[in-house]
Length: 449
Image 1 (cartoon, rainbow, N blue to C red):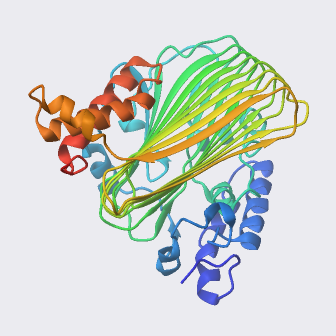
Image 2 (cartoon, rainbow, N blue to C red):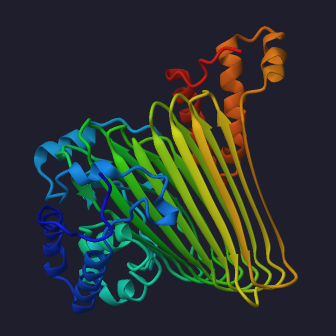
């Protein structure tokens, strides 16, 4: 059974009606209108299907059989569960905002920044306390008419993170947004909505982590909008490590101003089926962007990355490096597109996707694309799929290193091509350690030459 392009049966219609009350909750009039328009868009288009070219390789038929419903208000048991849950990244000296089932929980967060103008907290609270500050950006970057997941999130999100760094300021510490799914029933949809705004000349680093601790089939549908002012410096890292029973659909959409330096990292380790959409609009001149991705799959996992970089102005540079490590019968898809618009002369764009297969049953799909409508540009793309080198394993074993350790070292080095590009030392060190531990705990390196 496939997901229909439009709701066509009574049962299908009933599930999206469960999300309608979000559009009517107390909120500013402009927010209510935004939600209603997004819900109308969703009712018209529905969720993507295999008939949509950009989604045809992601198997989502099971969503038809789930009783989809929005996450409800938190209860005590869910909070206790979330508070006791282990967290794979041990980061000190951070501003930590914790969200459980998409809702901000200040009691288990740690926010101490008091810098004038800096805003860190709940998007739902900001909608009521500072509506004009939010109105300028919310829904203007990640547009609901792009696909059904963005439309559903816009229509029905309960909460999310609001990060605002005013012009000329630097956030004093790393900002860590932690999203935990806990104590929900099968078919529950968590809808975090995050808005990150860096004013002209601002500097900030944001780490966004998604975790879950249960065996129920739940869905995370997260949308993060980034608005980067002129000459700002922003590093953003998303780590998805949800359980095998989960579905994860994440959209990260950035609008980037002139002379910005922007680095984005997407690390996908978990979820039974996941897709991360990364879209970047290089809207001004002389922008320098890095887009890095790492995905590690085992069992029957499906992990997809869709990447669209739009060069709209002259003299901008973008680099995309996505590496995948696939074991067992898992599947990964990388679909990257660089779109150079008319007038975007002297664009310099490179796109690379490399996949390491640790099993004959693993499958990697790579689809790098260039769409160029300007002269005087330098654009390249490439893709590779291969296995661990027998010669490299022999070299390490000849120096007294055991087989499994040698394999893990080679896999770690392959992943390190992406991890080493993370500029923030604590994040890079912790991710490198977490990856080594993951390799030691699984059968990723269990193949024998």
